Length: 321
Ligand code: ATP
Ligand code: MG
Image (cartoon, rainbow, N blue to C red):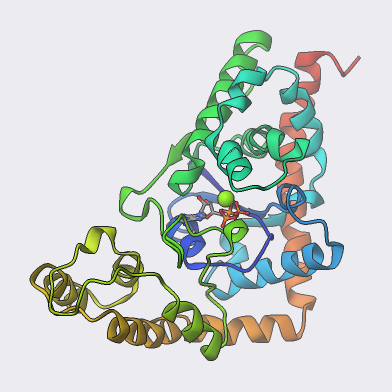
């Protein structure tokens, strides 16, 4: 089974990325053929600063490696190092109905937030389909926000196979209900483009500032509160030890949960939770040679596989003449 997962280098890795994507993905290293890539072409839909994109790409690679991705047990590369994916994206674009993309929530949400859309943002799901289909992926673990994009990918693949003959594996999405959507400090979905993230690799002072800024309601300490709708608890419960989570859950229900105290506790928990990774990441970025070597090796492996699919696609659609 081939499992594929990608992340945009459009900003620093946050707790939502970690829980929604990184953690489930790492668990596949020993159970499947894992493909992990940094989607810098996707990030171009929102980042127009070259240095930021280039730096972000290296840092994203360091993040993955620091959090435990072993490049010898997966294929790990940067999207643009296998530019064949854009050829496939164009071919897929030509069989993608406009309506399919017009219905996409992610696009509509971003516009509603006032982000002025370029065509890339609109066509984003087609490039994502190309990513998934080029490598004939079976399974794509994603956060809930990406569920619809996986459905779009399936629709495109089915239409292609129907029109041109069996070519693509039809992928499945995997969305864990437990970690469906991690809220940001403002209570909306934690998202790089919403500016409401808690990044994993902040320094301690910044981490404290972010955690203390998590919005909570004004219910007095001794009154009961709803843990399910509390942003703070929805983050806290993933990182605190299990017995402590149960205890705090009870305090919410019965009264006695103090937001300020819990926030301070969460700062310490997060700081310790990512301590080893933080040190590893600093080491990796101090000398980039290793990161670059790993990415070059990964790109070669990915290209070998992608080229085969693309050659078949060219024959199917008639661009190979
Ligand atoms: P952007 O705002 O630029 O879309 P993002 O913060 O949503 O950035 P992505 O790079 O789009 O991050 O997503 C990387 C992975 O992390 C995806 O699998 C996505 O589903 C997951 N993810 C992102 N945000 C969350 C969240 N708040 N909760 C759970 N999973 C998330
Ligand atoms: Mg996103």
